[in-house]
Length: 366
Image (cartoon, rainbow, N blue to C red; front, side):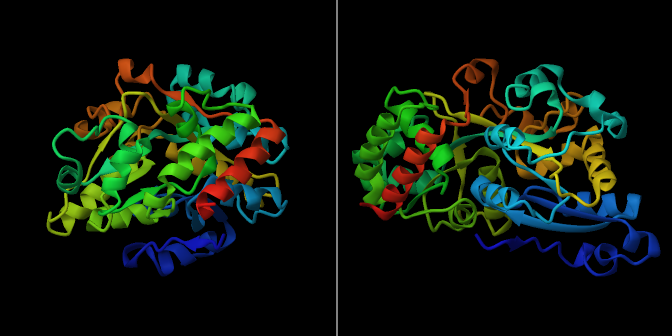
């Protein structure tokens, strides 16, 4: 996939990022992170404080990042894979081990969360969580009510996987993430099958379900939907939880003509963690640790959560996050809602091949 460049804007471009001093020219850092996933101020303040010259590029799928990492020449010092991809990348020896002596702000991380992540990274040796969230349904309330009436099942995957519902929503536009590792587990779970099923035959059942609704899906993409739902060009999207807060903010800034809302379906959804890790071919390892340690400051990570709408793993930052975000159960799930969430796991090779072939057929509609 073509690499996207993150445009930092006039406030932090020019000399501040290209390096206006000898120190900035000597110390470099190359970061590869998700689309629209950090505040420009964070990047500027990090560079101003450390004198490190920063190159910051973006991607929009785990598959795109993994292809670069597995090539053996990523070109980056710090990358941000999701936890289910991280597990097999750690097994493949893609990442360096972290030097905890360079990460004194590790103390702010939530201990229970870190224990959970050892399933993907034993001993938490290779990665530090950045943000986490769920996959849920974002929608335009006015257009959905117009298509389905007041009884629209907004809090259920029936809105998407029930052919009667999605066929009516097609008139105003429905989009899905272009990610087999995240959408197919949803289909499996909806069918009452294990979302991380290792059985190739289960993917045939998910394919049959997806092909029924395929004619009513406008497109598959992992970032375009944010703009389209904010503009009113589509009315329903399956996407990452925080992106709908961002889309709602964009719609309000554009005059409030469009309303964007979102729901975590009652049947449950995947929960994912995006992890900061240092590739084996990184050239600026000390600088990568400096960036991780900077992000681990409560006062640094809280404003990022405010902008992107995702919870962060920093136990000392939660009270600093805007209460409208931390008190929104569809962004920060309640304990009851957390019981419905499930993690995504790497698949055996034969199941992974079946999932990939299934996705190709679904996207082509054949």
